[in-house]
Image 1 (cartoon, helix red, strand yellow):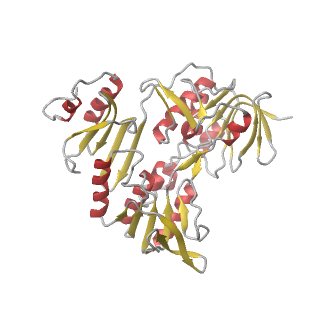
Image 2: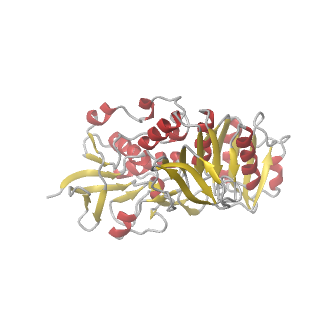
Image 3: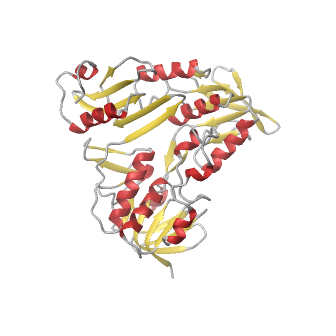
Length: 407
């Protein structure tokens, strides 16, 4: 007979952890079981590419709760185990070790896995993907005795790791296939300015550049061969080219899947009693009025809390604007809304780090998102409120006029 859990959570990351905390807040007695494929209790991944990698944050500070929280609150965390098969008709889940659970409510917070490059030399030692605490430990250890690093992928993870390793004194080359850094998230003009900022810090940035091969000696990477034949020396390589959402268990169980596990405003999937949250969830934003899947910490935390509350009998809806942040050198980057749907952008302030600036992302005459670099929170909150209004702005250029208050 399967072991029974009132609340079964698959995934011990940000969403899964915060779901468990929310459940226990509303239900003090129901049995909570969290299945995690990691060795650790739930922790914050955000510092892995920044403060923790830089050695400026202690390991114990990464964890959302102390280990005693879980035993004290009767939250069982099964570590280093994966979900293998879900049967929604019998409400049972089988793990990779054969252990089975029946459940009253189930949350899929399975996150994603790093997208791997399948190139000659991909199996060489010294090539890393940053997703887990153990990954970060390995990169930090390798960087301690290294002189040169190559970062493959110019998204936020790649840019943050490049900035951190440069701060640790390494010579860093950042390689990006697209025309400019951060191409999936922000506009070309702002991305070009950030690219220039990296260059001023001593990072060599190569855009519109392919990686053809990892070269090595005695089983360890020594360089990265680019499309033009140039080999960039490397004592270590960090690859950050996106993640693949872990939707396989949901898909095989017959849940509705569309580039993510489809959920409604209460984070319920197409199966009764089954919820999804975080990187794996494809949800409808009632503010932006569109379906999205967002891979950011803030959204995973908030969706986990909403899902957990609803699993425990509440009727909460997820109605938050997507939000993300990034720190690179002394650049504090914050963004609200959807920056990908832009038809035009309006800059408020100059492209400089000392005074900072806001970049507004319009879809027609409606403001869909705002990006802030080194601006104060009061102004960011006012810009966020403009996005939340969802009203057409007759003259979008007006938001760029600093003589006029955003309010």
